[in-house]
Length: 355
Image 1 (cartoon, rainbow, N blue to C red):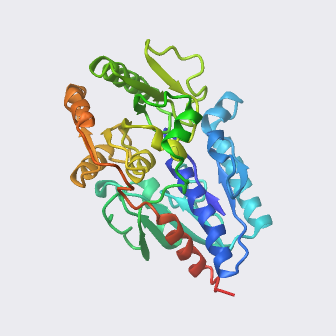
Image 2 (cartoon, rainbow, N blue to C red; image 1 turned 180 degrees about the vertical axis):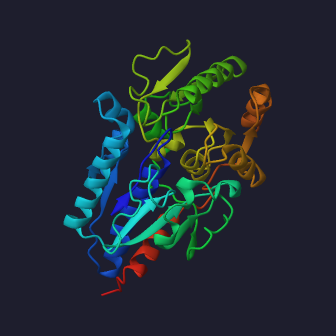
């Protein structure tokens, strides 16, 4: 059973879906039947199509507020739903992302004696380790799966850890021609992608729109495509973009990355790793997040030669020049196959031996 919620981005749920799909595949290879359930408050419906997991939708904070529920009422409801799910589903493992007791403490003191708990975590700034949402419930975790980012990250203190490569959803990349046909992009033009990541941050979307307009001005020969992200409620519908910019209404973009010659993107975990995995030259800019230092991620990617770190808006002309620099035929530049390794660690912990 996976428990994953998202705020401004879609990284937590995406990692859960990636590992769930790998569990099905790795379990089949071992002759083990695997049943997966994802409990989530995420409203990113576009993420769940074709997912190898049953879905339990929990009331999200904004939706509950609109329905007249006070937050304490919502938390009690979420906790009761999770406890009922564990009682009826009977999981061997409960896998949570980033926050051992859930981002709002939904699992605090819950589920004890019913299933072992596993933490999945990407890089978290060391100075935030003692923050309540990150530290609460660590003692209840039997294992932490630490996803690299893109270099090996620091272990979770006090918990047995397994390091795995970066975790993204496994997509079979479509050809450039097929991807452009799917996205409605010109076959022979130079195409730049501009995206704010998951799409739940309005300020990030506005900044992405500014970058897109600047890219169009500085590189008038290119088609500039703007993606809102799966958490943007209307996925660009009704949003008026400046003339010459192309809205993309397809999320997630993972299978279609070959359509793009370059990208300007928020340095969220999934977006940065998917672009690097597909070999798309990317300019990464940081959005402020309490538990994710995106500026540091952009620098790490730049140090590995995987991206250009855009520190402020004034650096955009240099970033666009970097994108226009000639490069050899691209290939997969970053291994991002952590999901199968994570699935093997879960199967080992659950005692699922090969038949």
